[in-house]
Length: 79
Image 1 (spheres, rainbow, N blue to C red):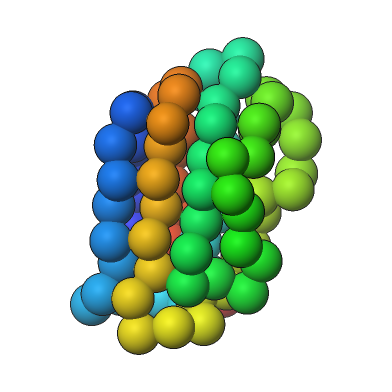
Image 2: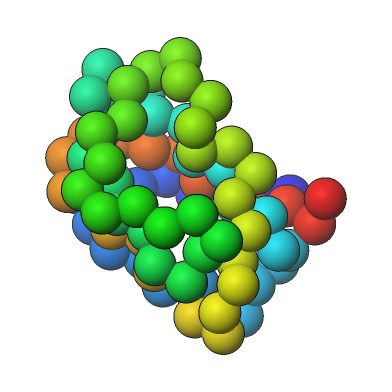
């Protein structure tokens, strides 16, 4: 399991640890966009306590995470 934290930034996953990525917002409101995943998001407002961003699958050679507002912990797992 790999753990990363992101705040107001963009991250590209190329050489990945696993196929699954989960996002846990640490801010009350987080704005997140995802590309290259099974479930893509575009400026989605993610609130604490929601499970919508759990166990998303990387489907492309490159997956992009863009955090436009807030703080998020990113878990990259194999299962």
